[in-house]
Image: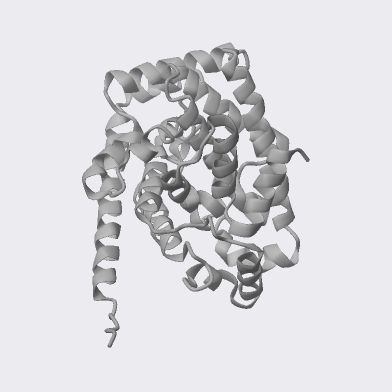
Length: 337
Protein backbone atom coordinates (compact mmCIF):
# COMPACT_ATOMS: atom_id res chain seq x y z
CA UNK A 1 0.00 0.00 0.00
CA UNK A 2 1.50 3.35 -1.02
CA UNK A 3 2.08 6.25 1.37
CA UNK A 4 -1.11 8.24 0.63
CA UNK A 5 -3.31 5.17 0.87
CA UNK A 6 -1.71 4.29 4.21
CA UNK A 7 -2.37 7.80 5.55
CA UNK A 8 -6.00 7.63 4.42
CA UNK A 9 -6.52 4.33 6.22
CA UNK A 10 -4.70 5.48 9.39
CA UNK A 11 -6.76 8.69 9.62
CA UNK A 12 -9.94 6.68 9.09
CA UNK A 13 -9.03 4.41 12.00
CA UNK A 14 -8.30 7.41 14.22
CA UNK A 15 -11.20 9.66 13.25
CA UNK A 16 -13.75 6.98 12.29
CA UNK A 17 -14.74 9.07 9.26
CA UNK A 18 -14.09 7.85 5.72
CA UNK A 19 -15.08 11.15 4.09
CA UNK A 20 -12.83 13.15 6.43
CA UNK A 21 -9.77 10.94 5.88
CA UNK A 22 -10.07 10.96 2.07
CA UNK A 23 -10.69 14.71 1.89
CA UNK A 24 -7.83 15.51 4.27
CA UNK A 25 -5.14 13.40 2.68
CA UNK A 26 -6.05 13.82 -0.97
CA UNK A 27 -6.43 17.57 -0.51
CA UNK A 28 -2.91 17.63 0.90
CA UNK A 29 -1.52 15.64 -2.02
CA UNK A 30 -3.55 16.93 -4.98
CA UNK A 31 -4.36 20.49 -3.91
CA UNK A 32 -1.34 21.12 -1.71
CA UNK A 33 -3.28 22.20 1.37
CA UNK A 34 -6.27 21.38 3.51
CA UNK A 35 -9.16 23.63 4.46
CA UNK A 36 -10.30 22.94 8.06
CA UNK A 37 -13.78 24.25 7.20
CA UNK A 38 -14.08 21.82 4.31
CA UNK A 39 -12.90 18.95 6.51
CA UNK A 40 -15.66 19.80 8.98
CA UNK A 41 -18.16 20.06 6.14
CA UNK A 42 -17.65 16.55 4.73
CA UNK A 43 -17.95 14.63 8.01
CA UNK A 44 -21.71 14.17 7.54
CA UNK A 45 -21.04 12.13 4.39
CA UNK A 46 -19.44 9.35 6.43
CA UNK A 47 -21.20 6.02 6.97
CA UNK A 48 -23.22 6.49 3.81
CA UNK A 49 -24.50 9.94 4.84
CA UNK A 50 -24.56 9.82 8.62
CA UNK A 51 -25.46 6.11 9.00
CA UNK A 52 -28.12 6.05 6.27
CA UNK A 53 -25.99 3.46 4.46
CA UNK A 54 -26.10 5.28 1.14
CA UNK A 55 -23.26 6.50 -1.10
CA UNK A 56 -19.92 5.84 0.61
CA UNK A 57 -18.10 8.78 2.19
CA UNK A 58 -15.04 7.83 0.13
CA UNK A 59 -16.98 8.68 -3.03
CA UNK A 60 -18.35 11.93 -1.63
CA UNK A 61 -15.03 13.03 -0.14
CA UNK A 62 -13.28 12.36 -3.43
CA UNK A 63 -15.85 14.41 -5.34
CA UNK A 64 -15.29 17.30 -2.93
CA UNK A 65 -11.53 17.15 -3.56
CA UNK A 66 -12.00 17.10 -7.35
CA UNK A 67 -14.42 20.02 -7.13
CA UNK A 68 -11.96 22.02 -5.09
CA UNK A 69 -9.01 21.38 -7.41
CA UNK A 70 -10.75 21.52 -10.77
CA UNK A 71 -13.48 24.10 -10.23
CA UNK A 72 -11.94 26.14 -13.04
CA UNK A 73 -12.47 23.40 -15.62
CA UNK A 74 -15.37 23.72 -18.06
CA UNK A 75 -18.31 22.37 -16.08
CA UNK A 76 -19.04 19.39 -18.30
CA UNK A 77 -15.42 18.20 -17.94
CA UNK A 78 -15.54 18.44 -14.15
CA UNK A 79 -18.86 16.58 -14.09
CA UNK A 80 -17.40 13.88 -16.34
CA UNK A 81 -14.37 13.61 -14.06
CA UNK A 82 -16.52 13.21 -10.92
CA UNK A 83 -18.81 10.78 -12.69
CA UNK A 84 -15.86 8.66 -13.76
CA UNK A 85 -14.46 8.65 -10.22
CA UNK A 86 -17.77 7.33 -8.89
CA UNK A 87 -17.98 4.70 -11.65
CA UNK A 88 -14.39 3.48 -11.32
CA UNK A 89 -14.62 3.26 -7.55
CA UNK A 90 -17.70 1.06 -7.97
CA UNK A 91 -15.89 -1.15 -10.47
CA UNK A 92 -12.87 -1.58 -8.17
CA UNK A 93 -14.71 -2.39 -4.95
CA UNK A 94 -17.99 -3.88 -6.22
CA UNK A 95 -20.21 -1.08 -4.95
CA UNK A 96 -19.79 2.52 -3.76
CA UNK A 97 -22.82 2.01 -1.50
CA UNK A 98 -22.09 1.78 2.23
CA UNK A 99 -25.33 -0.04 3.07
CA UNK A 100 -24.68 -2.82 0.59
CA UNK A 101 -21.17 -3.32 2.02
CA UNK A 102 -22.47 -3.52 5.58
CA UNK A 103 -25.68 -5.40 4.94
CA UNK A 104 -28.46 -2.86 5.37
CA UNK A 105 -29.59 0.50 4.08
CA UNK A 106 -29.75 2.05 7.53
CA UNK A 107 -26.24 1.28 8.69
CA UNK A 108 -26.80 2.29 12.31
CA UNK A 109 -29.03 -0.72 12.87
CA UNK A 110 -26.17 -3.01 11.87
CA UNK A 111 -23.20 -1.45 13.69
CA UNK A 112 -22.67 -4.33 16.12
CA UNK A 113 -23.06 -6.93 13.39
CA UNK A 114 -20.69 -5.02 11.08
CA UNK A 115 -17.98 -5.05 13.76
CA UNK A 116 -18.46 -8.66 14.80
CA UNK A 117 -18.53 -9.98 11.23
CA UNK A 118 -15.47 -7.98 10.21
CA UNK A 119 -17.28 -6.05 7.51
CA UNK A 120 -15.48 -2.86 8.52
CA UNK A 121 -12.38 -4.38 6.91
CA UNK A 122 -14.14 -3.72 3.61
CA UNK A 123 -13.99 -0.01 4.46
CA UNK A 124 -10.18 -0.19 4.44
CA UNK A 125 -10.29 -1.70 0.97
CA UNK A 126 -12.67 0.98 -0.30
CA UNK A 127 -10.49 3.74 1.20
CA UNK A 128 -7.32 2.40 -0.41
CA UNK A 129 -8.93 1.97 -3.82
CA UNK A 130 -10.64 5.36 -3.57
CA UNK A 131 -7.32 7.11 -3.01
CA UNK A 132 -5.72 5.21 -5.87
CA UNK A 133 -8.53 5.93 -8.36
CA UNK A 134 -8.59 9.60 -7.41
CA UNK A 135 -4.85 9.96 -8.06
CA UNK A 136 -5.11 8.11 -11.39
CA UNK A 137 -7.83 10.43 -12.63
CA UNK A 138 -5.99 13.48 -11.30
CA UNK A 139 -2.93 12.56 -13.37
CA UNK A 140 -5.09 12.28 -16.48
CA UNK A 141 -6.99 15.51 -15.85
CA UNK A 142 -3.78 17.43 -15.10
CA UNK A 143 -2.58 16.50 -18.59
CA UNK A 144 -5.91 17.42 -20.18
CA UNK A 145 -6.67 13.78 -20.92
CA UNK A 146 -10.42 13.15 -20.62
CA UNK A 147 -10.50 10.16 -22.95
CA UNK A 148 -12.16 7.96 -20.32
CA UNK A 149 -15.69 9.07 -21.20
CA UNK A 150 -17.75 7.05 -23.67
CA UNK A 151 -18.97 9.34 -26.50
CA UNK A 152 -22.65 8.87 -25.62
CA UNK A 153 -22.12 9.65 -21.94
CA UNK A 154 -19.98 12.68 -22.76
CA UNK A 155 -22.72 14.00 -25.04
CA UNK A 156 -25.44 13.41 -22.44
CA UNK A 157 -23.47 15.13 -19.69
CA UNK A 158 -22.82 18.06 -22.03
CA UNK A 159 -26.52 18.40 -22.86
CA UNK A 160 -27.53 18.27 -19.20
CA UNK A 161 -24.83 20.80 -18.28
CA UNK A 162 -26.04 23.30 -20.87
CA UNK A 163 -29.65 22.88 -19.79
CA UNK A 164 -28.86 23.60 -16.14
CA UNK A 165 -26.51 26.49 -16.89
CA UNK A 166 -29.03 28.18 -19.20
CA UNK A 167 -31.52 28.07 -16.35
CA UNK A 168 -28.98 29.17 -13.71
CA UNK A 169 -29.65 26.12 -11.56
CA UNK A 170 -27.30 23.72 -9.80
CA UNK A 171 -28.98 21.49 -7.21
CA UNK A 172 -26.14 21.49 -4.70
CA UNK A 173 -24.80 25.03 -5.18
CA UNK A 174 -28.32 26.49 -5.29
CA UNK A 175 -28.92 25.08 -1.81
CA UNK A 176 -25.59 26.39 -0.51
CA UNK A 177 -26.17 29.86 -1.97
CA UNK A 178 -29.67 29.87 -0.47
CA UNK A 179 -28.17 29.30 2.98
CA UNK A 180 -25.34 31.83 2.67
CA UNK A 181 -26.98 34.40 4.94
CA UNK A 182 -27.43 32.02 7.86
CA UNK A 183 -24.04 30.33 7.78
CA UNK A 184 -20.79 31.26 9.46
CA UNK A 185 -18.07 30.49 8.25
CA UNK A 186 -18.93 31.72 4.73
CA UNK A 187 -20.15 29.28 2.09
CA UNK A 188 -17.12 30.01 -0.11
CA UNK A 189 -15.46 27.06 1.66
CA UNK A 190 -17.88 24.58 0.11
CA UNK A 191 -19.09 26.15 -3.15
CA UNK A 192 -16.29 24.78 -5.34
CA UNK A 193 -16.13 21.38 -3.59
CA UNK A 194 -19.89 20.99 -4.11
CA UNK A 195 -19.79 21.44 -7.86
CA UNK A 196 -19.42 17.77 -8.81
CA UNK A 197 -22.48 16.65 -6.82
CA UNK A 198 -24.89 17.87 -9.51
CA UNK A 199 -27.45 15.30 -10.62
CA UNK A 200 -26.22 12.70 -8.14
CA UNK A 201 -22.43 13.04 -8.74
CA UNK A 202 -21.85 14.13 -12.31
CA UNK A 203 -25.40 13.18 -13.37
CA UNK A 204 -24.89 9.58 -12.21
CA UNK A 205 -28.29 9.59 -10.51
CA UNK A 206 -27.12 8.68 -7.01
CA UNK A 207 -27.89 10.83 -3.91
CA UNK A 208 -29.66 14.08 -4.85
CA UNK A 209 -27.23 16.99 -5.11
CA UNK A 210 -29.54 19.15 -3.00
CA UNK A 211 -29.11 16.74 -0.09
CA UNK A 212 -25.34 16.81 -0.62
CA UNK A 213 -25.40 20.61 -0.49
CA UNK A 214 -27.43 20.47 2.72
CA UNK A 215 -25.01 18.00 4.32
CA UNK A 216 -22.07 20.26 3.45
CA UNK A 217 -23.82 23.27 5.00
CA UNK A 218 -24.71 21.42 8.19
CA UNK A 219 -21.11 20.28 8.48
CA UNK A 220 -19.78 23.76 7.78
CA UNK A 221 -21.88 25.20 10.59
CA UNK A 222 -20.99 22.41 13.02
CA UNK A 223 -18.17 22.50 15.53
CA UNK A 224 -16.95 19.01 14.67
CA UNK A 225 -13.16 18.91 14.61
CA UNK A 226 -11.67 15.45 14.09
CA UNK A 227 -8.06 16.63 13.73
CA UNK A 228 -7.22 15.62 17.30
CA UNK A 229 -8.76 12.15 17.08
CA UNK A 230 -6.59 9.18 18.02
CA UNK A 231 -6.64 5.41 18.31
CA UNK A 232 -8.14 5.66 21.79
CA UNK A 233 -11.15 7.55 20.44
CA UNK A 234 -11.74 4.89 17.79
CA UNK A 235 -11.35 2.08 20.32
CA UNK A 236 -13.92 3.76 22.55
CA UNK A 237 -16.40 4.04 19.70
CA UNK A 238 -15.97 0.37 18.81
CA UNK A 239 -16.17 -0.83 22.41
CA UNK A 240 -19.25 1.19 23.30
CA UNK A 241 -20.70 0.50 19.86
CA UNK A 242 -20.63 -3.21 20.59
CA UNK A 243 -22.65 -2.48 23.75
CA UNK A 244 -25.01 0.14 22.32
CA UNK A 245 -25.11 -0.74 18.60
CA UNK A 246 -27.11 2.01 16.86
CA UNK A 247 -27.14 4.26 19.94
CA UNK A 248 -23.38 4.87 19.71
CA UNK A 249 -24.09 7.37 16.93
CA UNK A 250 -26.24 9.36 19.39
CA UNK A 251 -23.60 9.41 22.11
CA UNK A 252 -22.14 12.95 21.93
CA UNK A 253 -19.57 12.13 24.61
CA UNK A 254 -17.93 9.31 22.65
CA UNK A 255 -18.95 10.06 19.07
CA UNK A 256 -18.11 13.68 18.27
CA UNK A 257 -20.28 14.07 15.15
CA UNK A 258 -23.39 12.71 16.92
CA UNK A 259 -25.39 15.94 16.67
CA UNK A 260 -24.25 16.56 13.08
CA UNK A 261 -25.17 13.00 12.10
CA UNK A 262 -28.63 13.47 13.58
CA UNK A 263 -29.20 16.61 11.50
CA UNK A 264 -27.93 15.04 8.27
CA UNK A 265 -29.93 11.88 8.86
CA UNK A 266 -33.13 13.84 9.45
CA UNK A 267 -32.52 15.88 6.29
CA UNK A 268 -32.02 12.70 4.24
CA UNK A 269 -35.12 11.05 5.69
CA UNK A 270 -37.30 14.13 5.16
CA UNK A 271 -36.42 14.32 1.46
CA UNK A 272 -36.93 10.57 1.14
CA UNK A 273 -40.40 10.80 2.67
CA UNK A 274 -41.56 13.84 0.70
CA UNK A 275 -40.19 12.92 -2.70
CA UNK A 276 -40.26 9.12 -2.56
CA UNK A 277 -36.48 8.67 -2.60
CA UNK A 278 -33.21 10.40 -1.83
CA UNK A 279 -31.72 9.43 -5.19
CA UNK A 280 -31.80 11.68 -8.24
CA UNK A 281 -32.55 8.84 -10.66
CA UNK A 282 -35.46 7.51 -8.61
CA UNK A 283 -36.97 10.92 -7.90
CA UNK A 284 -36.87 11.94 -11.56
CA UNK A 285 -37.63 8.53 -13.05
CA UNK A 286 -34.73 8.94 -15.49
CA UNK A 287 -30.95 9.26 -15.73
CA UNK A 288 -29.46 12.41 -17.14
CA UNK A 289 -26.25 10.70 -18.28
CA UNK A 290 -28.07 8.23 -20.53
CA UNK A 291 -29.42 8.77 -24.07
CA UNK A 292 -32.82 10.45 -24.00
CA UNK A 293 -32.54 11.36 -20.32
CA UNK A 294 -32.04 15.09 -20.79
CA UNK A 295 -34.73 15.25 -23.45
CA UNK A 296 -37.25 13.62 -21.10
CA UNK A 297 -36.15 15.93 -18.32
CA UNK A 298 -36.81 19.00 -20.47
CA UNK A 299 -40.08 17.75 -21.95
CA UNK A 300 -41.52 16.97 -18.52
CA UNK A 301 -40.15 20.20 -17.02
CA UNK A 302 -38.46 18.24 -14.26
CA UNK A 303 -36.36 21.25 -13.35
CA UNK A 304 -39.42 22.57 -11.50
CA UNK A 305 -39.27 19.48 -9.29
CA UNK A 306 -35.54 19.96 -8.71
CA UNK A 307 -36.11 23.57 -7.71
CA UNK A 308 -38.77 22.44 -5.28
CA UNK A 309 -36.40 19.92 -3.71
CA UNK A 310 -33.70 22.58 -3.37
CA UNK A 311 -36.17 24.95 -1.69
CA UNK A 312 -37.27 22.17 0.63
CA UNK A 313 -33.70 21.36 1.64
CA UNK A 314 -32.94 25.04 2.27
CA UNK A 315 -35.97 25.23 4.55
CA UNK A 316 -35.07 22.03 6.40
CA UNK A 317 -31.48 23.11 7.00
CA UNK A 318 -32.55 26.55 8.21
CA UNK A 319 -35.01 24.92 10.60
CA UNK A 320 -32.31 22.59 11.89
CA UNK A 321 -29.85 25.42 12.43
CA UNK A 322 -32.44 27.50 14.26
CA UNK A 323 -33.31 24.54 16.51
CA UNK A 324 -29.64 23.87 17.27
CA UNK A 325 -29.08 27.53 18.09
CA UNK A 326 -32.05 27.56 20.44
CA UNK A 327 -30.89 24.37 22.16
CA UNK A 328 -27.44 25.88 22.69
CA UNK A 329 -28.96 29.00 24.24
CA UNK A 330 -31.07 26.89 26.59
CA UNK A 331 -28.10 24.82 27.83
CA UNK A 332 -27.53 25.48 31.55
CA UNK A 333 -24.51 27.66 32.30
CA UNK A 334 -22.37 27.11 35.36
CA UNK A 335 -21.24 30.29 37.07
CA UNK A 336 -17.76 30.50 38.45
CA UNK A 337 -16.93 31.97 41.84
